[in-house]
Image 1 (spheres, one colour):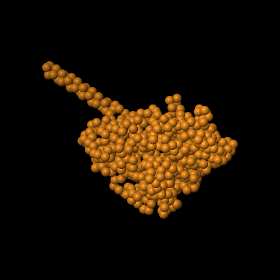
Image 2 (image 1 turned 30 degrees about the vertical axis):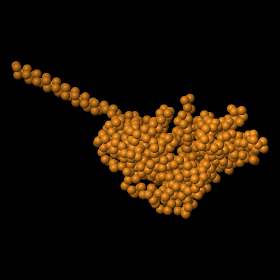
Image 3 (image 1 turned 120 degrees about the horizontal axis):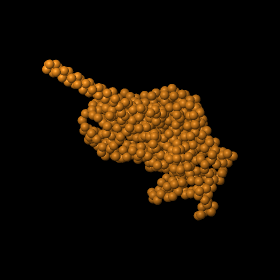
Image 4 (image 1 turned 90 degrees about the vertical axis):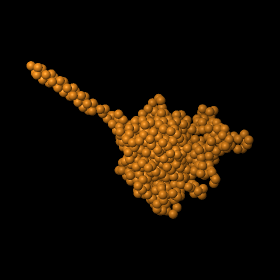
Length: 606
């Protein structure tokens, strides 16, 4: 009997233990099976995470040996953008022009400039781009037109319908000479000198905020606004994917009706180093960033959205250009009343507010400023150079190229590349004799022109180490090719084991990661020298950039990098780094060389 009791008790205990063990096993399995699922990914439009590349056509590739880049040259090299991982290209102006400001003085908005080719050449380029999956945007210049345009000629002659197509005004009497006249106001052109030019045929002055040959349209005239829509429709009907819109801050000036019938003088800056004809002598209170201009931008956005409704397909976009303070810049996105503007305004903060002298804290502050001020849900973008400013490696340092391209590609939103940044092209030297930039010629002289010249950032692209860097076989190119092309060129970088171009390719490939297209971000300065950027999304690899922006080495502690779990693997590193792709980082302490950048892949966040 005792044995049966013992047996029975044993059975009960064993059954109980079995139930407990089974319960534990079930809990463990349930826990595993119920780990958080991947997050639901909201679809994004093609432009919201694209890699956008600016082509300066005159300097990209010459197909007919005249020393000037052209549309056929771009078509010949479209595979470069496929290799580079570029999603969309926009071209600086290709329209008919006297080329005073190299295409930004348009005489016919509906025709291709003869040096660049024909309409057929453009259509071939557009179709081939689309075949390769590349979007194509045009540079739209609505603020002004060439004084050789039919618009201006008709307005000069007071032809009905065109009398007020531009800003015309009577002169002011000269109190010191009754037989003389003065310009309508003290406004100064962006290229120096008075912003007003007298025309005897009409006995009036016209406004030109840029070169004398670039007359400002009158956007208070409904006919002008209608014509801008007509121009956009013409090119949208051709099949372009949108526009980069130029010089918007200057679109509208003060209304004389609000100032006793005359154009008011801008207040003086008080800066003694400037004379009355020099930019900086006045504060552009009445000539820049007027609130009315945003209504025009909102009208254009409404038009392209309606165009999409009537012509289904991929989104047609407007990207706006305007150097303004952060509050005025954000209004290009839209306003608090619900108006919608450009898909995004270009972010020039890396161009205007950062340089080789900036600290890691400066970088983080400038990046977070844009992300803080932009409207909720708006798409950010990052620009490191363009045709109007010194090239990225010249403004910063050559050893920062890969780190800067890494920031560009890993920050949320759109990454914008200016022609040549993918291979680390620097400014080329252009002598006074070879200078063609109207701004440098107008504002400078033989001793000072380089302070103003945009030519060094526009020298021809370096394809290889052959004649003229492979840009052209002509004996003379429109601007001289930079002397460093034998060392810095695309063909060499494709062959080198490590190169800026190969880093660039790795970065554009990495942009396909969901942590970059959909993930959160965290960016902090670890010191004055180094910063980190973390992109993370639950169940997807965490991406981490470590970047020393200084000219001295820095020792950093990785335990301060949020969401980074060690060990982590090097995905790509700058060309002078001692770390190689595939290296495993296990130590919490890491030394970064001057300018060094390392991109890591680590475990997903919990």
